[in-house]
Length: 246
Figure 1: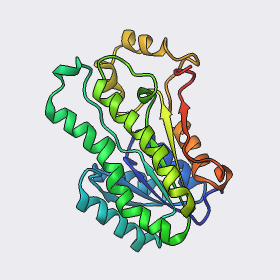
Figure 2: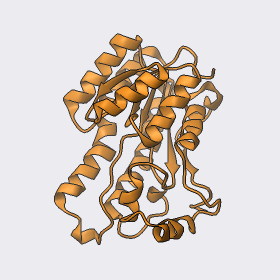
Figure 3: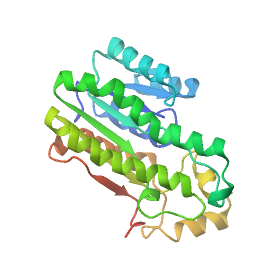
Figure 4: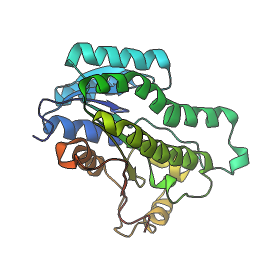
């Protein structure tokens, strides 16, 4: 019960890695707010784990402010935030990605972390402690072609994590990131362009351990970074990638 008596927000918690993180946090004793733009999905996971749910658009300032207010009202505080919500554009030459897709990727993957920080960091400063876990990607370390602007958004998030960690350490707030390789999530088909046995084999050939990341892998890693076991760890972007970035 490493997160006993802690409260946590998991964005994008209605499916994929976010759902795995929400499940693990609840199993370790946390009270969890599952936030997702898909309100029904958030509710399903919350009911499964005995948590709370709120439909949230992490790229919208008003929606993020509501998330912070509702979490404090329902859970009594905010100890942990996992910025997991993310999107990608379909594989394409960088100059062919539409401006609409570019803006969406940057809003959900980057601006959301700013908006969440603007609401949550003052609460954590007041409490004198907190843990933030940003879900970045191996794409920010070892980019794949034709996912240029997604790669860039995750590189931004890794740098943001380190900058946040330096600034917030004196206030007792730790900030770390996880870099998963592609996993069995709703984004997998978007990364590959098409979900075929041949395309999966091509992807898996770049992962030494020979499998995709799972929601359980990310749940275990996020739980460690959010717990007191990682009290001396901040500013780290840890690969959960089966050796992909070696």
